[in-house]
Amino acid sequence: MMPVTAMCTAGVLPLPQEVGHHFAARGWITGVTGLGEFSVRIGDVPAVLVPDHLTEAPEGAIGWRAEPTRPVPKGTHELLVLGPDGAELTSTPVTVRQRPGEAPMWLGELESPKTDRKAPGNVVFVCGWALLDSRAPSIVEVIVDGGRPVRARTRLPRPDAAAELPEFPDAAVAGFEARVPVNLPPGQDRELTVRVRYYTAGAGEWISPARRFTLSNPVPDADDAALSAELAENTERALARVQVRTDPRHLLVLTHSLGLGGGQLWLQELLGRLVRDHGWTITLATEMDGPLRTDCEELGIPVHLTTHYRNSSVPYYEGHVAELAYLAKCSGASVALINTLGGFPAADAAQRAGLPTAWVIHESFSLPDFAYQNWGPHTPPRAVWQRWERTISNTDKLLFVADATREMFLPYSTPERCRTVRYGTPMVKYGGRTRAETRWQARHTLGIDPEDIVLLNVGVVESRKGQGPLISAMEKVRRSHPSARLIIVGQHASPYGLALAETVERTGIEDWVQLVPVQRDPTPWLQAADIFVNSSDIESLPRSILEAVCCGIPVVAADVFGSREMVIDGETGWLFETNDVDALTVALLRALDTTAARRQEMANNAYRHLADWLQPSGYAREYSEILTELANGGEQPT
Image 1: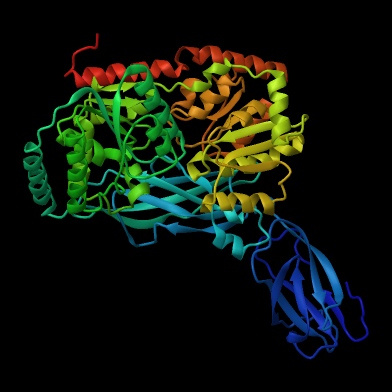
Image 2: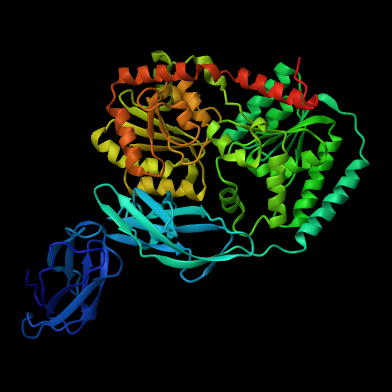
């Protein structure tokens, strides 16, 4: 403890057996005249030195107290005292970990809601970042006013935390957020409390103190309702002057995007079959352009590009709805098909143009939750919100891909207007199996070792798809299954995607985790896989699960909405609770601990279980019948 150099000696007083992220060490040094002539480090973290009187120090020595400049991560580190020339004078080990009988070490910040501040709207938005026992917690639960705990979405990008805590591997994805709708009428305030529970198996839990705040739902603009009615009447008068001959086989489609994504590719497949197999003429309008416009043009579908649906104010909303209503009225279509929940301005426009309307709702969000995450706490204004609810209620057919989503929206409509039409997939042609030769060829082409056990996730990388928790689970999985390899197909340069790439690099698991850019055709990756993983915390009916089943790949899936309608735990796949990294880890281990023969048997069971509705021709025929009935004024097609 007291090595001697030519001029300096140093010593460190004994430290407790375990210390937390923040601690102080005490010691002494000789051969210097001030604190600026030497330094102290704890691992890679420099310390701040202040004078300290030590009775234990030798005569003439300077006593010091050292505190790390930033938190020190869990583990055993060397505390080094470095002399004026940078040479080591002494060292002693320091162990940072949870003390027996105490709560786990917690670092973080609850950023919203603010203490004693008003939060706008009728949704409590809770967000921040946290590390529990030096890693991102497995579960974060939000409790508002003593109500039912709500699971937060975790592993969100936090580049600021990563910059502040470079020694913590999970800091780059330590963020979390949750939205908790509150039944608060417009014009009212309510004082609430929020607590956050952080938990990881083996580490324990840490529960935050209660934070008090006020939720304030603004008073609607008194003029909005009158202005909305006036502008809607103007649109109605203008539309009444338009007389166009309609074609009973002409369909107007209004969608949000022609980019590559699950909902867009599903729509493209449907439109192709409606044109080729059922004789429909189609006109399409979209708020976002993308590569699928070329596919539309090849089908003879003209595409009208509009702007993002505008709902931030009554004039913007009514103006945009008028534009779409004129398009609908002049198109010559006899029926409209709206794609996605956020397309309510388009659905409103089709109804005002007098078109019977079918509206496909893929999203399994409540309206307040969907509105908050897409448009924030202040939009849409009350008059537009009422239009949204009224449009849902007035839509002739609300179409869903999962029964669980249908149940969510029944309060806004009636049972006879709500119908579940499940996806199919063209990949049904593979018959629920991948031949050994095809698998070998796919692996050879993609550079995958024949001995690797490939866990595959397919989906555009975004927080709701849960790729962050999946990567975290992989760190534990590889310890017991070193041949397991995770491939995520859907990477792109979003903040979330960049944070995932940084996490893979910082944790040194590049040999076990591969991020692959978005692929229009993921078939080769499916053919090369051993296990498919769907880790989303919000889904309706994940089409990627159907594709995996058609290729004979057993599925591990989050137990959410449509997933549980496809996967029977232990029989046709494995289910796990959402937003729980520990549960995800256990599910992956269950699948990997299952023999290859049993995994194949479960994949065969899954194909037989879903075979009745895997054919895309089936849902295309069902859609054609629904649209024909609407175009014929409710009469059943012959």
